Length: 151
Image (tube, rainbow, N blue to C red; front, side):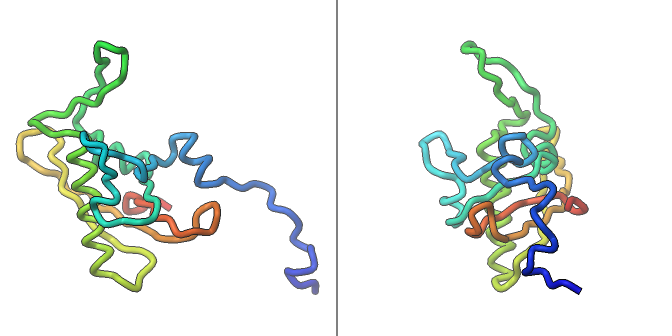
């Protein structure tokens, strides 16, 4: 029987990088997301490594209950009800994630939940999430947030 190091396994048939997933919209990169003053939201929440969320997390926590509208310059803007903002929802998600990470200091994955005011009326829906920290495309650590049940 040949061992793994002698080339028996050959080259991978297919690989899908984190960068490709972000470019394809499968992941939403939050690493450079900024508030209205140009401050990085991830840094404000206490993170020093890149963070991305799945498209399903985006839809369930950030976009939920919103309507996409075009502004006067033709840019698409997500309009949320009840005085909510995309920045506010991103801050909420990142703060709750940071608290979950602080509870599980030596773990590579954490479970947490976020309350989302989908209708802007104060009634919140609970979204179950988990985050995993692992090597990114260049082997440096990255965090990915997923819905419960996503792989």
